[in-house]
Image (cartoon, rainbow, N blue to C red; front, side, top):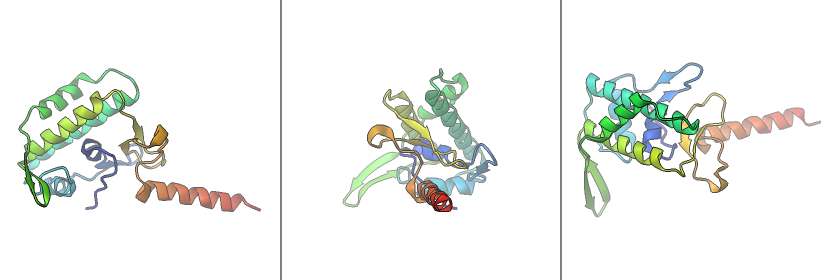
Length: 179
């Protein structure tokens, strides 16, 4: 399974584990093993955490709560109370242990601590009055991302996948209409 971490925040990257939310949603976290792979691929989380069906359910609830709260922020509406409860409950859990070595920092802990870390990162993001959240401008991509570009003019989630496709399509359209 290939996961992309281009949203600028691991909480938004968790939300992005559902592709194409508008048309034909595809859930990349269908099994506990998928969740284990996602956690292992995320640089901000402990390397190896076992997941069971109950942990997967908690992760999916947190993912959907973060998605709802991000949409609330983007549309300038009050936060959805049920989603706030899920996020705040997850943030109250145990934190991963952080260690420093010559190789850098290393997090360790269980899945619950990883979800606590994600929830706290979401809270930090959603509480910042200067947060600029956007949805990718590519029609088939529904990824939310944190726009930190100069002038907040970024229009797609990442250059590798969506940016290249948008630019290539625009180039082909210009060539097709040229005399």
